[in-house]
Every structure is written in C-alpha cells, then in structure tokens.
Length: 158
Image (cartoon, rainbow, N blue to C red; front, side):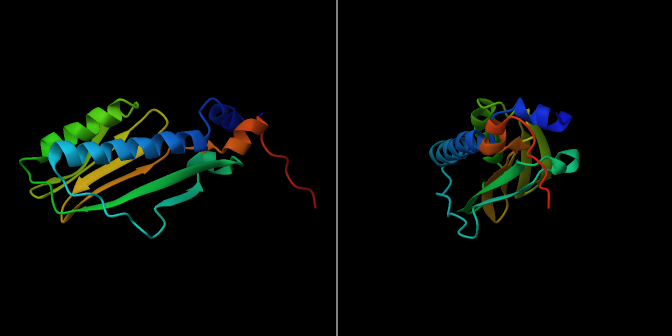
C-alpha cells in the first residue's frame, strides 16, 4: 500500500472532519459575538466552501483533499485594546478541538492576523483590519469513499 495513503488512512475522513470544523467555526463566531461584542458575520456568498488536491507529496494520493471554509466577515475592526481578549476567545475555543499552535501573521496597530494549527495541519485564520475575518482550511484527509475503500484506487486501464 502507498505509504502516504496508509498515513492518511489513520486520520478521520474528510466529511467527518468537515462536520467538526464547521461546528467549531460556528462556536468561535458565537463566542466572538457574545464575549467580545463583534457584529454577526455576513456570509461569503461566493463559494463559502471550496476544495483542492492536497499539497506536496500528498498531491498524488487519489481520494485525498483539502477543504477551505470561509465565514465571511464581521463588519468593523476589533480595537487594539480588545484584540488580546478576542484572540484568547478564539484560542480557547479552538484549543478545545486540538488547535494549539498559534503563529502571528500580522501585528500592527489596527491590523492583526493569526494562524492557528491542529495536528493534521488544519489552519484557522483569524484577523481584523477594516473588517474581522475567520476562515479555516483542513489538513489533508481522505474522502469518506477513499477511507471506506481502505486502499488506493485502481489505476484505470484504457
């Protein structure tokens, strides 16, 4: 069996992760509104969910994908004074689901962005400037079909 396929087979399937990740984004949005007082998110009507092949060596694994989820935007900026509290809310909620590694992407007055990662390489992007954004990309996972098949797909013969 292909070593990359075997490694991905140890992970949950993509559809299961999608359900968990969408629920996580919903909890984060709710807590940001209730605890920090940001405005409700305006959904991104242009493909809020998209997908692609996995990166790098995993790009050749049939049935493996990465998905991206956009929450849209919350109108307005989180003030510099409130940013640490908002970031803590996101880290706390995301941490409950294994997102523990935070990297600062942008840190300047009125403009903040972080990326938070889980063990599968999923990434939450949270930031504020003119508006506040929240999005997520999964790590590489096999689709449910690939996971249930339990082995790489047969190569077509023509």
